[in-house]
Image (tube, rainbow, N blue to C red; front, side):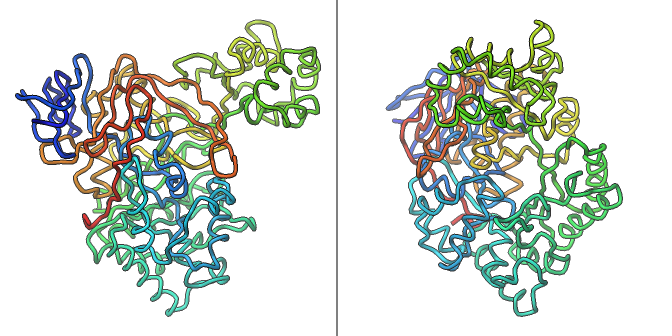
Length: 562
C-alpha cells in the first residue's frame, strides 16, 4: 500500500537523461518506485499527458524574513519550487547581537526592499549565532525546504560594530569572523555570501559592510568552506556600469573570484546580467569565467531567464506619480482608483501625464495586459509603439488598457537583461546557472519568483533553446548539486519526494497582482501560475491546480545533511 501513486506521466528525472513514461510511487515522504507500479495507494494521481519532474530549486532568494510570517513561501511555491536558498548577497539576520537587530532589519530593507517594520514584527529574533538561527528555522513550520548561507555583512557587524563599514579588520577581528563562519558551517550553512557592489547600501546610504573587503579577508573567510569541504561563496560582484566597471576592472574582479575558488576548492557564484549601459561587459565576463574554469576554478555566474523589470500598476505606483492629478490616487483603494481613471478626471490625467513618464522613455515601458503574461519585450509591443499604432499618447493608451482589463494591466520597465537576445546568449553559456529570481526581495518593485514557469514555457516549450530534459536539469539537479543540497534535485528511488506534475501545454503566467499581506499591512507583488497540477514536498501535496493546500512539510536543508 503506497501513500501516492502518480500514474502514466512522462518522468523527466532531473539528471538530463531521457524522459520516459512511468508511474511514480511515494511512501512515507520518499520515492519508492519508478516504473510500472503495482498495488494500491491512498491517493492515485492520473498524470497522463503530463510531465513529472523533481521539485525546482531556487538558489537566489531573500525569503529570510518572509518565511517566518508566510510559511507557504509565496509566490515561489506556485512555480514548482520546493527548495530555496536564503542568505544571499551578504545580508542575513545571523549572527546578530540583540542591539543590532534593528540595524540588520534596516540593512535588509535598504538592500532588498523588504520593510524593516515588517521584519521587526515578523521575526522572533530568538538567536544570536548562525547555528541558533538554523535551529529556529527548524522549529518553524514551512511549506518549502530552506537552506541558508551566513552573510559577510552580518559577520562584520557582529564582530566589528560601528567599525564594520569603513575599516579593515584587525587580526583579532578576522579570527573572530573565521570562528563564526566555522560555527555556521558546522551547523549546516550552505556557504558564505557577500556583497561587492556599491549598489547595495545601508540606511545611511553607505555601501554595506564587506563591500570593499580585501582578498586576504575573503580568503580567510572562504578558507573555512575549503576546510569543511563544502559550501558555496556567493557574492554580488563589482561588475556593470553602475559600479563604474571597465574592461580592466572586470578582469580584476573575475580574477578575485577565480582566486578564491582555486585557493579553497569551492565553487563561487555571482549575479551577471546585461545592464542598460554595460557595453557588452557581460560577454567579457563569460569569456573570463571560461578561461578561469579551464585553469581549475569553479566559477558560475547566475542570471535571470527574462528581463528584471520594475512593475507599475494602478494598485501600486504608476510612472506618472509626479503629476498632481495622478497623486490623487494615493489615498484610494483599487476600486476607487479604477472608478477615478474612468471618470471625468481622465482628460486631466492624460493632459498632465504624456511626456512625463517619470523620466522613463515610453519605448522602454511594456504593457502586460494579456493572459498568459508576455515578457518577451518585442519593441513593437512597447507602450510607445502600441500608442503610436493607434494614434494615441502613451498615457491615454494605458488608461484604455486599464479600462479594458478592469485595472489589471501593468507596465514593466526592464532595467537588467533587457534584451532577449542577450538573455539567450547568457543562458546558452555552460558555466551559467539559473538564479537571481530574488523571491522575497524588492517586493514593491519586481515579481520574478515566477521565473521557473517562464523558463519552461518560453525557452523550453516555445523556443526550444533547451531540450525538455536539459531544461528540467537546469531547474533541479544543476542548482542542487552546486549548493550540495542533500538528496534534492533528482527524482529517484530513495530520495525525498519533492516533485511536480505539470501540464506543459497549459503552462503560463497570469498577471501579477498587488497584495497588502506583510506584517503591518505592507504591500508586495504576487503571481500565481497555470499548468501545475500538483506540487509535492517531502511526499505531501502542497499546491494543487494553483491553490496551496496549507500543508507545511518543508525541512531545513543543511550542508552536513543534519
